Image (tube, rainbow, N blue to C red; front, side):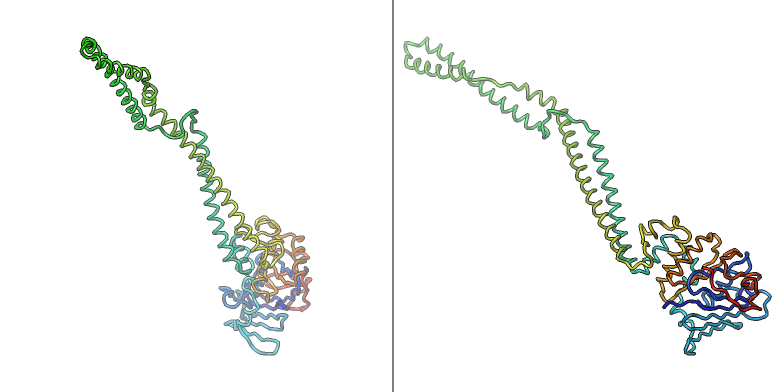
Length: 422
C-alpha cells in the first residue's frame, strides 16, 4: 500500500503565515491563489518536511515572523512528521509510538515525487534514461543502440561506395570486339621471329635449289664424263623442285599492324576490365549493404523485444531512439495531461511505496486537462498536490497573503478542510 498525505499544517515557512489542508486521498488537490501569495511555499514546506535538509529553503523563515517555522504532516500509514524550532528539528513518530528519523521517511518517500518539476525539466533523452534505469534495461538497450549505430555507420559507408562504383562503371566506355586479356608485345615479337626464321629457312632452300641448278649446268657440260653424277643430281633436282613448289611464305603484316596498334588496343582492353571490376565491386558492396540492413533490422527487433518484455510503469509507454514515447507520441507532442501521467507513473515506479507527487504551476493547463489528470490519479490510487494561479472552483484552498482559505473562511478561525476537487 503506497503512502499518502492525510493532513498538513504549516506556519511561518517562506511566504506562509498559516496553512492547513486535508488533500484528497486519491486524485488531484489544487492550491490556488494569485501570484506571490505563498502557493509554491506550501509545496516547498512539504518537500522540506519529508525530504530533509536537501530540500530546506535557503531562507526558510517567513519575513517578519516572530515564531520559528513549524510543519506537521500526518500520513495514511499512521506516521506523524513534525519540523519545528530554530533548528527545524525533525520528529517522526510511527503508529506504535516509536520515534524515527529521516531514514524512515526515505524508505517510502521518493525524492522526485517531492520535486516532479525537476523530472519534467529534463530533456527527453534524460527522461528516457531515468525510465530505462528504473525498468533495468538501460545497459542492454545502450549496447544495442551502440551496435545499431555502428551497423548504420558501416552501411552508410558501404552504400556510398556502392553508389560511387555503380556511377563510375556507368560512366566508363565499352569497346566491342576486344580480347578479354591485354595483348603481350613480347608474344607478338616471338611470333614474328618464328615466321622470319621459317622464311629464312625457305630462302635457304631456294638458294640451295639455285646452287643445284648451277651444279647441274656444270654437270651437263661434263655429261659424258659424269653420267652417274648427272643422274643423281637430276633426281636431287626433281626432289628439290617438288619441295620448293610446296613452300608458301607467310605474311607478318597482321602482326606488324597489331604491334603498331597494341598500345591503343590494350588501353581499350584495360578499360573493359576496369569497368567489369567496378561492376563486380558495386555488386559486392550492394550485397554487403543489404546484409547490414538486415543486421540493423535484427538489432532494432531485439530492442523492441527488450522493451516489449520490460515491466513498464505505464501501458503504451516505451523508448524509441533514446526518447520517451507514449501512445506513439514523443514528449513534445504529448498533451499536458499525458506528460503529467507519464512523469507521475515513472516517479511511482522509482518507489512504489510513495503514493503522492507535488506539482507546481499548473496554470498552463485548462480545467478539462486538470479533470482528466485528476481522474487518472483517482483510477490509479495516487495523490497529487499542486499549485495554480487561479481562484476558481478547481482549487481546494486559496492562499492569500500566506494564509489558506476554504470556501471563504480563514483556516485560522475555522478548521473546516475541504477534500480535493478532482
